[in-house]
Length: 521
Image 1 (cartoon, rainbow, N blue to C red):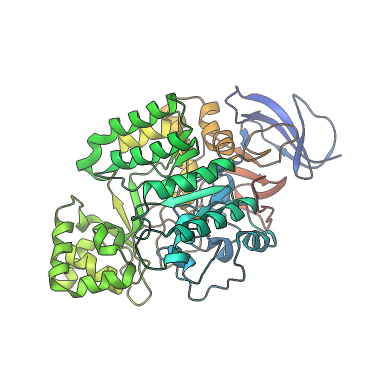
Image 2: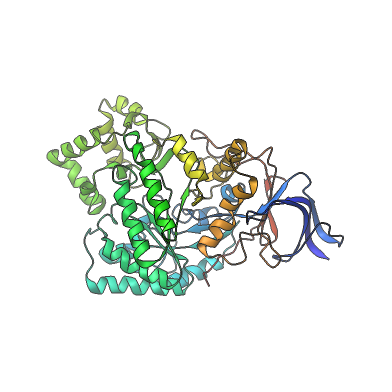
């Protein structure tokens, strides 16, 4: 007797093959039989007539660690309710291990306040052991964040590394990869990674290549210097033959949209010349990021303490204001998503705040950064929807949330709706546009990212693979989250099985936490 049989489903196996109406049997955590009809008994049976059965979705761009949700909300509800069964943490240069000094975790303070955090690990191996003792709604894997490594050595200093320092970081990276990290991430636009040289990145990429890991790059620029930033990442990948993923590819601000074709052409050319490059993208035209990242690079070098000294100096402050006035950002329309608890402008635009304070929008930006703590996050609509659409359908793209797994309980903070609706929004758009068949659409969410990451026995419906499965109703699949009310689960995802257990049943969360901590083997 099987543990589970899913009957009469249109099975889209994740490989791009045509869908077929089949029964699928699960025993313990694995798929053990696939046939037009399975007559054997089962402890549990689900009739999926008229619905699609797909592999569980894989998110290569997740921040459930940075937002502390793997501890605060281990069910990772907003991820699994949109079909994700595996998420990759440690992105954009920030991971929760290894912690080589007390400064290491500073890299995530732009996303989450760590004052009350209980941390009882230091090495990546200890971190993996800690996570392995916990239960999650979906499987979790992690990269090593280079800012986490680097800040452990230099703290808030913005400087080049000494040879012995670089050697220490390379050793820590190798130890982390030995312990099961899937690769290395960089957040090159953030204050403490701006100074990182291409030579330094080259040395790290060689190690990642040796371990057949993923080299994930948040580009140094997604705006006026995006071409140069892409050249840098692609040059490293060409030179080292490392497995490169560009995080949340986009062209920010209307003044830079004309660079789109050249950017895409650079990636296409590199790929056709043999570079192992892909990118992830989310189906939204609005970004969610730290407010301080709008400041000129020189103003944030040295960290928050130095930045605030610039604010207090009238000459430096005027230089910053002049810069903000001339970068083409429509600050009045930017919405505040979260600030420190001592001030609460959540849901208000910078234009509204400026009016209340009787200052310019640019001055309001500095006031928010100064008084809102280190985790002021904002929404800005600054992407071309046609370009986003083109990236979604590009053959080298995967669909990544760049979000985290939250519950549906309203918070005093706003989160980006992509945390709740990335996969379902993409499915809805792609199925409606009919540019590709569902087989290609599902591949972008499943076997494509699974193969890129090197996941074993996941991302494809196949006998012997783990039973990470999604039953979806294509006629009803829909994202519900909005910027004003993001805490709304998706619709049309009827069942989600993680390692053979139903974490979503009948469109509702169950009490099951069957996700595992995955290590690269």
